[in-house]
Image 1 (cartoon, helix red, strand yellow):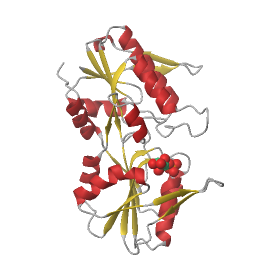
Image 2 (cartoon, rainbow, N blue to C red):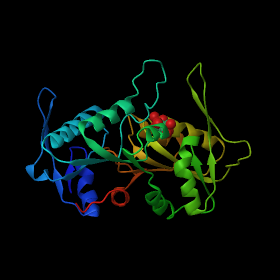
Image 3 (tube, protein in one colour):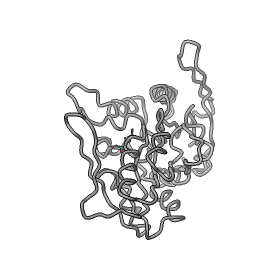
Length: 302
Ligand code: R5P
């Protein structure tokens, strides 16, 4: 097997292939003046097995097209097994028909990837359990507990609380709490059906005054969710508010919003092609844990 890095995978491709013990080859690419995508796959990739690496933010739609074209080309040239590591899977939050007639984008995307010839994909911290169930056997989802625990164990002590911003976040918060032996709390999330406004509220028996918290979520997009909770925690007298998330999209003025809300520090994985340079933001490398996860799921010696 060899690894083939697509345009937005190459920043992770060399590290990931090193941990996987695979040769890494880069897809040659450019954008034509009219905006169309040009791709060329070096011929040495035409073995039996290929592992692609491509992430899907920013420019989600372009990244998807690149991946579809490369998979289809490899299959049409006779590559038998094509897999992909996709650290950030775009559209994962559009996982239901919220309004009648809406496209369930993540389902369409996954079916297209499968139709193009992908056999299995390896993603990091997928947003939706519904998607996971629907595409069981096609998606392998890594919850990055090892990387998170290694990082948190450096500074998180007994005076900390781990916070799940909603019930969905429990799947990553519970194992962290167990591994670090630190208590966790879950925030109740209410949506006002009329205004659409989201309100966060702590269970009544929880006191966070003078505590330090680490809020663990999957995605920071506009920063609204975390900023909302951080402002609420500040009003309740929380001492330090650390943020740990898998995917940092930092759309628009997300960082300014988070800083203004009173967060102490933000740490995210390097699952997207966005790299914010600021004292308040740190990045953790996911390549080793992702490589171990892929090795566990797939025989690589062919
Ligand atoms: C919500 O269910 C997700 O887990 C994230 O909390 C949310 O998508 C973050 O988005 P934003 O940063 O725009 O609030």
